[in-house]
Every structure is written in C-alpha cells, then in structure tokens.
Amino acid sequence: MSKLKNLLSKYDTPKKELSLLKLLVMNASDGVHILTQNGDVVYCSTTFADLLGYSLEEAHELNVKDWDRHFPVEDMIPVIKDLIENPKIFETKHEKKNGEIFNVEINARGIELDGDFFSLCFISRYYRCKERGNG
Image (cartoon, rainbow, N blue to C red; front, side, top):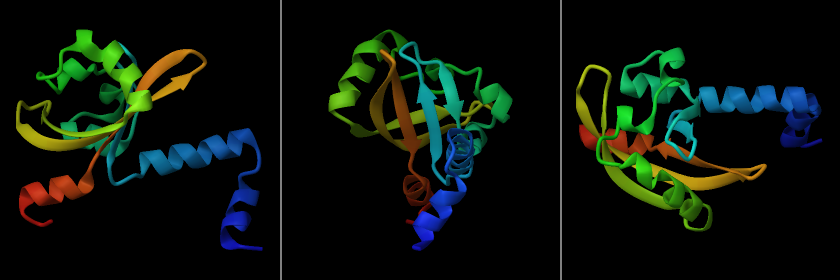
C-alpha cells in the first residue's frame, strides 16, 4: 500500500477527512483565508491571523476592508465570480492591527459552494521572504 493510500485510509470518513483538511489549512505556511462576496472572513489559517497581528478568533470577525484599504468592498461580488473562471495572482498592501503596512502577493481564486460564491486566497510565503530580502 502506498504511503498516500495508507494516510487516506486513516481519514476514510467525512468527519476524519474534514479534520485532516482543517489541520492542513491551519498549519499552512501561507496565509490562507476564505472570504464571502461581501469581503467577510469565513475561515482562515493561523498564519493569516498572525500576519495581520490578530488572534485567530479576531481574524474570523474581519472584513477585507479591515486590512486592505485599496480594494473596494462593493467590487467583491463581480471580482469573486470572475475569479472562478480566471484565478489571479496580484500584489497589494495589507494593514496590520497595529497600523503597520506591508506588501503582499495574493493568489486568489473563486469557489462556488451550493450556489454561494467565495474567494479562496493565499498570501505567498515566498513573497514575504522576498520583501525581507531573503528570496
């Protein structure tokens, strides 16, 4: 049995599989976050919360306008729907809880779940290293 099949056999129920997926997202080195069409965070990784200087609980209460002042929230609905067919990588600036501004590279794609549209975004670890001169 391959290592992958062995691993997957341990997570063969929906509940166990969900636990594995949550574990992977929460421990991702990139800042993972999922936004509603209105820009509200519905799920995020600890890395995402840490990057912005928030606790995980606080980060789940944020809206994109709380950290990205350059992205008009009213534009979210068409942008997210467009991301489903046209994923994008772009640069922007984020603002931490303490007011510090930093550059980020976002890899974003739209997802649809039961007729609802979301934006699945990753803040690149490589870009953060590049900003510090380590990449």
